[in-house]
Length: 416
Image (cartoon, rainbow, N blue to C red):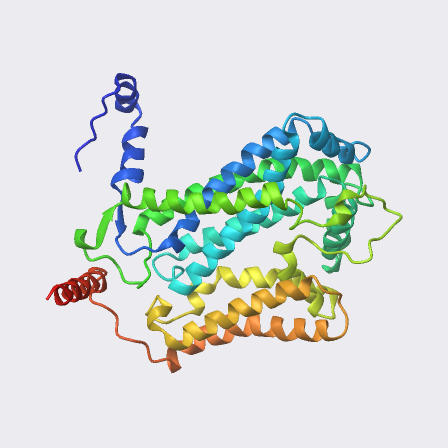
């Protein structure tokens, strides 16, 4: 491909010596992209925008936050009341975490539905799961920083889980706390890690994008592109599509920030942390609830911890569990049914994680947990042997052009 010609002399001077503008021009403008991507492919770029938003607002908030158990809660209240537009920055950051997880969860389920984890994109998928794991660690540490009741007791309960590890468990907990209880040392190290981890996520995201551009995006019908007839330049076709998706995303995000900013939070976190008063019902943020339900579904403490981490670990080996040669569930009728069962199961786990660990809720949690692992460890390897898939199109262009031909024929018939 010919080298792009830049009119700006400064840009030309820099690009001759460091071709970053040529690289950006290729990746953002001329990068060949499958012509049949739908709006579910918008969520990758939305996740990137959410990450940048979280980093910027987090840096601004850190300028006014005091990481000390005696002042942390008051410093957050000062941000809300006295710092110019502090309430807005905090609500954007607080709700941004929830919307970041919403976008990433949809992005992951899209990958599951269309088989984006299959060869040759295994490493792309693994890096995506690693990003999710880093997000969860970052979000957990960030939730501790306001030093409210739910922050303190959530940190106490979750960090105590590591004590279930034989032999070294107690030492790990003491190391995490920086002492013998959740105290000032814990808050300081959580603040430091919460500040650093987003930049680690940025690094993994860059690797994720490099892996994506190695083989290109997957597409809704899950077959490889056959040449230039199956692709279009990324810009302007998908930049416009991404901008429309961004507009819809910002509409919902702004509604949350301005009209119900505390809807996805917990009211107990507006009470200063008190080690002497235990909340009636300790629950994590909503995006941890499915994993929390799995943790509580297992009667043994160590078993619960193993199953909770196993729920994420199983995603790392997904490319090798599903041996079907067909990627997209559009051509896998049985797989498609079980996919929606999995979605319902994850939503049920989220609901059960918010309920008390007693009675029918415990029974349902165990059933939902059993199905979650059954889906990945049994159904995924078994389905290729019992499922009759639909015939695949010859190329990406075939269903696109056949649809256009059908529409043209219909229009011609209507004119007659």
